[in-house]
Image 1: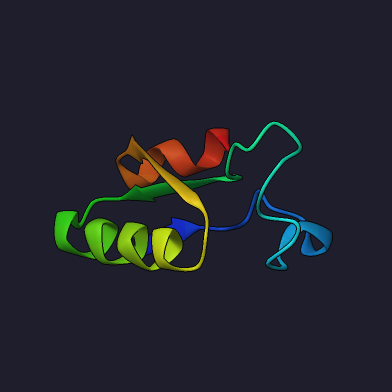
Image 2 (image 1 turned 135 degrees about the horizontal axis):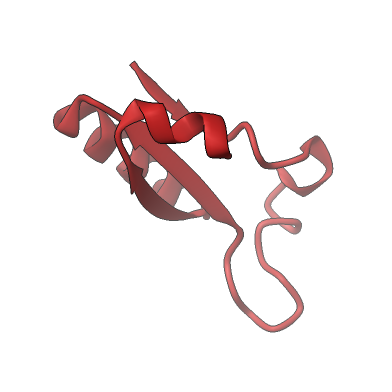
Length: 64
């Protein structure tokens, strides 16, 4: 199980919304106990324009 994308509102989940005015990409926090799953979701997030940030174990998801 991987938790990601739950901190991003729908209005920024469009190609134009993923880039902020200063050129920085929107962060997609990724939490998981499965390293391979986290890497796969992080790669997917990056491929659609997000900046993935791995925050550790799935238990960390509750802080997001």
